[in-house]
Length: 479
Image (tube, rainbow, N blue to C red):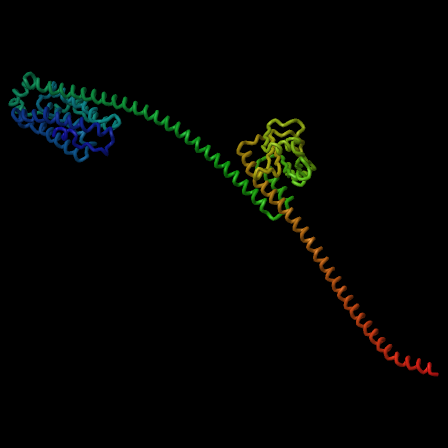
């Protein structure tokens, strides 16, 4: 029950510094109620009934403070706990002292003790409330002489209360009031000490929590930095992947275009040089006809690009000859950052200079090298750029292989068409010869028939002429 009364008005939605003042306020209210207000109300009713309203008002104030706290009025009830007892005691003290006499020590001590209560019920963050309440408490104490001149009992009442006043001055009530004043003052100091100790403990806990939070924050910050670094690395990798994907798509579009192979090769090396921010490049094609005819492959320059100008140069390497031939022979790319003097120069309108980086990449598909790409730049090629060129090499090699097959197929098709046309011409010539032969045969048959008819006619004529010849012969013989 007592715990519920002490914690009345405690609301978790309140700020922490106000919640910490509710319990001290309730304790002081209970002490004021049971140690000061109630006993002095009883004593006053016995010895000086006309002034019972002053300590009685203290009882009402204490009960009102508890009710106000339960209703959430802690901001206002604390003022009454600290200030109202001071006013009641000073007025009570003024009434029972004749004008010009010093106040009763015990009451004065109680008033001073309640001045200290202000620091118990208010937090230092409520500085305006402390100043207002403290000023309000100081007024009746400072101006007590003036108040005692105005407020006093009548001579008859003072005479009747002489015994009571004497007990307050030197009797047992004096000890009671002094003790009450000391209890209030000492209790206020002890309360302040406990509050200060609690504040120190909370400060230490807050400091420990702050250190732990700082450590946690440092750990979180380090973790965030690591995560941020990972995110940045992932973004960089994603950017590189997107860059490579876009470049491969651009090359694929060039290779799919319906242009002749020479223009496609020119566009391919131009795109690679510009996309990799190189300064010069060349595309070499392996001559498969040379491989079939000779023991060593011939690698011929198909297209060249430098500083936005195409330079047609007649260059040819054999297998193992130079860096291009060596890359073909080994089947691995060559990346050089120390270029031999006079190996290659990048030329511009302002002059020429040796590049800082050289990359020679075999173009392979199904482990067959179809060509070589050679690019040079003033900056060093990074790993993702080399990997990009290597992936491009598969597409370009596939195109070269397909293009070679198509050219060979077209050549064979053309030869087949030429042979077919020759066969058709020969067939037509044979048909014409057959027709001529058939005509000749018909003519010979016709002539043969004519000759046979002539022979038959001659035979008939001969047969006709034979009897006549015989008769003439016979007549001649008779004569």
